[in-house]
Each structure stands twice: as structure tokens, then as C-alpha cells.
Image (cartoon, rainbow over all chains, first blue to last red; front, side, top):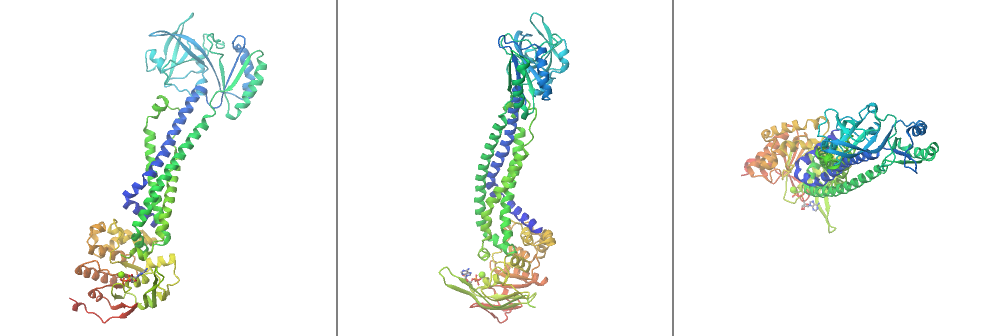
Length: 403
Length: 235
Ligand SMILES: Nc1ncnc2c1ncn2[C@@H]1O[C@H](COP(=O)(O)OP(=O)(O)O)[C@@H](O)[C@H]1O
Ligand SMILES: [Mg+2]
């Protein structure tokens, strides 16, 4: 017990006394651990941003897009037929989360003049499926479907056109056309686009029960998005492709995976590359530690001899040099991890990578990367200390203390 | 039983050209507990070699060395190192303090290799011994800022801190001016006597040798008794 404490005390004293030398030799280790930890930390955030961006457009894993239309006219089936055909399918696979999305156009009477804008007509469930989180107000909800005033969620760009923020209370905007209606803006999202984005609840008191109108301008039929467990995705797609045409004779049915299943692999590859680069830098850093360690042992031959005269065993001499190397590299690793935490926490990453859109699920600090960095630093310290320690053990005491 | 008992000790070294150089040929020496023995001899006569053999830093090539009545020829590695740390304190001509570590740290250093209480209370013990050699107020100085005499007093404190049975001093005054050397030597003799530690001093200085209970001369690889020297007759 006191043997171990003794080795530790000795190693610490060495590191303390030879601060400058130790610090110099550790620059490489420090940089490597810092690079590994901070790049992994950044990588996780960038990955999350990528994932959330992908989810905002394609839906979460696994989202299946489903649409049907008459190949002759391009018209979707009427609501009753469509729902009857789908009901069985949803039940069979226990699919409880699904959303509809269709595209249309609306004439918005904005303070600066009337503009025709593309409108995304969605069911309230579209929000959670695409991880949309309003920065002000709220997302669409089931009750909006019975409201006489269609509920809208717009992006910040459009809010500016509507007179600017902040949105402290719902706002109205008149949608023109043959029968003008007053729509209500209930929420604002931040998507960073320099163009107006409008989500409109897919049904409202005005047109209850009606399926989204077929789009005369060629936006295509509305899509039903099904959210299913990843491993069921393929089964659901093939079931839909075989069953649905039977229920909807004469119609063309399309079913396809919408989210990006390759994303996880891409990110893993990225992480592997970063880790590989970090390992190389760490080895180079270790070479520096090794070099200085060898030099230090040569300079300290006399000191080693003196310690031998105190009764230091070979194991102690070996352990002290080795541990000195490890203590030093672990300290460098700790400092590097600490700096990485500070840097990753304080960089305006969201502004750089995500147009200032807040991240819905901000990843925590990469504890695993930090631990790996520390373990790697200790390993490099041990490796770099091995030869100097062996050299130290071979020092001949009587030669060392002879003046 | 004698503390150290050497009978017919020889030490020869193999030279790079294949020859053999006998340094010690037939050394007989007995050191009793608490005794102070001095050894004088010309430079190159093998005094340091003998001291290294005594302190288990080196092994003889012939003869028998009993430490507390136990033969030492079978001692290897760990046990040899342990026994060296427990039984002996060393004082060198060049002080051999650990550079850039304070006097207190230097004195505590041998206790890093001790166990239990001795290890845990090393810093307090170091300061106490520094008090005893009159350096209580310099405990936090690094050797580089101490005079030669002070450095050697730190080395003496360090040799005493584990309460060894024998202190081995290799020309402890060799790097000091005459006056400082004698003061340091007096301190060493007094401090070892005070704690009942035997002292083997190697020296050139007959006045230093005169402080010992017994004076021996190393010549031709053998030890011979010297006629007692009286300190006062040396100018
Ligand atoms: N390992 C060795 N190899 C060769 N010669 C040595 C070795 N050790 C000591 N010597 C020689 O042995 C002689 C005695 O050395 P030493 O014990 O240091 O003498 P002293 O301390 O009396 O001056 C010297 O001539 C020295 O050069
Ligand atoms: Mg000598």
C-alpha cells in the first residue's frame, strides 16, 4: 500500500519539479486528446444537426410515404375510399403514428401586397413526426381541424412579411380567392430559409371531411406518412404494394421509404476517420514523450543511483519512471478534455451548422470520447515510458554515484 | 554479535581488455553497534569500493560479509534493496542531494521507500531531523541555494532519517573547506552517537579521522590498524 503511494508521490514530485520539460513533451499528447475529444464532440453535434435536418424533410426513422392517384387524371382517391382502404393496413401493423401532407397554394394578403405562396397542408401529427418545434406560439393540433379559421404555422421570414415578431398572440391573415377566409397564425418555426414557409392544418371547419384537393398546378397527390419501427419498414412497404392496389382498383399506388437510412453509417464513417487521425497524432505525441523520457533518464542517472542507495528496488525505479510518464500524459489528457469541453460548449455551433436553428435534442458532452482520450493518453504514457524505465533499471548504482 | 563482520573480503573487477584488477584483496573488518570507525587511504586505494560493499551497493568477489550475523551473499534484488534502505544511511563527498527539491523533501526521500507509519509521517520526521542538524529554518530551501556546509548537513539529516544501524560516509568533508568540514564532521559524529548509529567514515583528513573510536588504513587491498591520532597534534 505505502509502496504504491510511494511510487505515486515520487512520480508526482518528478512531474512537479520538471514542469517545463514535462509540459513541453506533452504538447503532442495534449493536442491529440484535444483534437480527438473536441472533434468527436463537434461530430456528434453536426451529426445531430444533420439528422434533425434530414428528419425535418424526410421524417424520422422509419417513415414510409404512401400515395395513390388515378394514372389517367392524376386525381387522388376520394377520402372515403382512401380511408377505408388504409384502415385495415394501419390496424394490421399497429401503426398509430401517421401524418398526411399535401401541397397547395394560397393567396396571402400581406401588408406589402397580395402574394401567392406554396402551402404545405399537414395533419397535426406531421409536427412530431418531423420534429418540428415552434420557436413561438404552438404547433397545429387536432382541435384546429374543427376551427372555422384555418390554423397556420409560418416561418420567421413570413412572420416578418406579416409585420414582424414577436408572436405573442395568434395573428390573422386573410387568404384571398373566390371565397376569402381569415386564417390564424398560431405558431412560428425557425428554419433559416429566406423564403416563406406555411404549414396549414389539412382540414378546417370550412371544408370538413374533404380530402386535400387535387392540385391543379401539378404538386402531385397528397402523401400519407407512416411511422413504423425500423425493422418493419420493408415488410410494410411490400404489404402496401401488394394489398393497397386490390382495395383501390385502377389506381396507381406508391410506397417508399422517405427518411435517409444511410445517415447513421455515414456518420459512423466520419467518426472512425476522426478517431484514426486522433490516434496518429497521439502516437506522434507519444514519440515526443518517449524522446524526452529517454533524455530525462540519462540526465538523472545520478539521481537514480541516489534513490537506489535509499533502498529503491528495481520495481520501484521502473514504476517511478513509468508512472511519471503516465501521470504526465494523463494530466495532459485531462487538460485537453477540459479545454475540449469549454470549446465545444462555447462555440456558436448552431449558427455555423444549422442556420441558427436550435437543436431539438442537443447531444450531451461526448463522455465516451473523453474517457477514450484519457485511456489512450495513459496508454501512450505507459508505452513511451517503457524504454526509459527499462534503461533506468539497468543503471549501475556505483557508477551513478561515483563523482 | 557485531553489526558488520567482514572476513577475507576481496573485490576484483574485470577490465575491458580481459585483465582482472584486484581492488580489495583480503579485508577483515568488524564494526560494533554504535561504533565510529574511520578509514584512511590514498586515492584509488579502494576506499569507495569497500564502502559500496559495506552498503550492499556492490558485492564482494571473495570472502564473507555478515550483516547482523546474517550472510549477505545470497541476498538479491528486492530483499537486498530493502535491507540496504533499512540498515544504512549514506553521506557522499558530493552531497548528492536531489536537485530542485527542498531540504525537507530531500530528507524525506528515503522514507518514500519505507512502509506504514514511517512512510506516512515522513514529512514531519524530515523536519525534526533538520532541526537536529540546525537547519530547521532552511527546510524549504532548495539545495541550489544552500552553502556546501549546509548541503552536507542536509545530507546527514537524510542519512539519519530512517534511523539506520550504520551510516557510511565517503569523504564527507572532501568538498568543504577545512573549518566547515570539521564542523560538519563533528555534527555527524555527534548525531550518530546520539541515536546509537554506527559510523564508518572514509577521509583524507587525519583530524577528521581522529574523531573516530578506531582508525584503519586501507593499503594494498587490506585494512591495517593505525596508531591512534590525536586531533590536537594536527595543525
Ligand atoms: N568498475 C570498475 N572498473 C574498473 N576499475 C574500477 C572500477 N571500480 C573501481 N575501479 C578502480 O579501482 C580503484 C579503486 O577505486 P575506489 O574504490 O573508487 O578508490 P578510492 O575511493 O579509494 O579513491 C581505482 O583505481 C578505480 O579506478
Ligand atoms: Mg572514493
